[in-house]
Image (tube, rainbow, N blue to C red; front, top):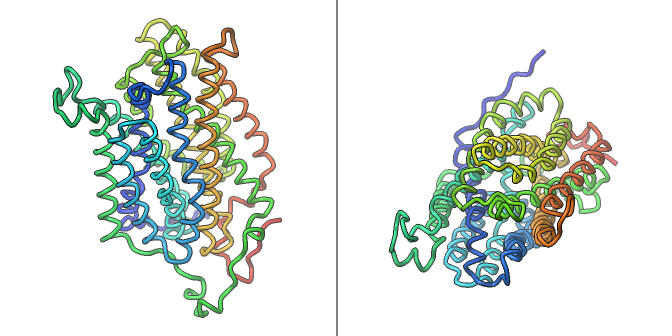
Length: 453
């Protein structure tokens, strides 16, 4: 007997998704021009060192987010989701504009760090999405988060590639003084405007979703079930899922950081020799497939295989993509490079949809009560932020090192092969996660709740 799916609450989903859109836009809009931005700061001694400084810039966001995400997550469990979302949007708006007008590398580094320090929305948003859904539609609702991430990544990549340095000779705003002084201000302004729209919608449309267990069951809030501590919540099963989450994030952050550097590097050094526009187009074109994968394919696969099964299949898909990517630079003609490149990036998108949508579902399934959703999503985001801090650093250092080496596999293939090996190891570890994680625990009656040992 099939379960009737509850209609999606679009009245709240649409403004919430608009709020969520700001972070992927700010992340992706930088990728097409980060190579040229670092080059313009004149801090790298040679072009082979640019990847290292680009990785520092990317990692600064993740380092700051890692240090503060649990504070924002637990704060949302106490004062509500909506106030924390609004604080995060306000901080993102100001700090990203500061990044856009940074005259030196170290000011840009400080602005990205401030951006990460105030970026608590991602963990809080996952809690909100879990709270406005039920067992019949939760997979479809949670699938919208990575969908919005990919939409923002596509739009941000395109904006960063097309709008960067608009005052250059032949550019759309050739000679405009402000854009000569700040060549990357225009794409950052576009991303900041989206953040401002999210802030307005969050202020006037988004409703509070946190409901205390005591309030639902007629029990006074202060006399309800005591809050579980860190050790009680971090069971072996939770720890196993979080470690798998961290490994997946490390793999993807490494490869995502290296791709624009790989694409911008000359063919003689094992790259593709792309300019900022070509990098932006390549990221945008492949990202278009996410609409179909996220809305049509993933919910069906989740019903058939469960979130854990989808997660394992996503890792399996990522391995051949990682192994094959560096071989594209060996193709001589761009007319052949583009079909191969887009095909591989489509494989990457499919793998990432399966991995990250599934890990989001598994995380909310682990929370024993709704009051623990903020904590659980915060722990997940700490794991992701920590590895997103290490991933770009590892990728940048490995790429810079490989540029000084010759001979397979220590040449430009090295970082891709390393990522593929880590993906295979993560797939092996995922076999030990029990199927019980496919069930949402927070809706069980209090006297029936257990935490897996």
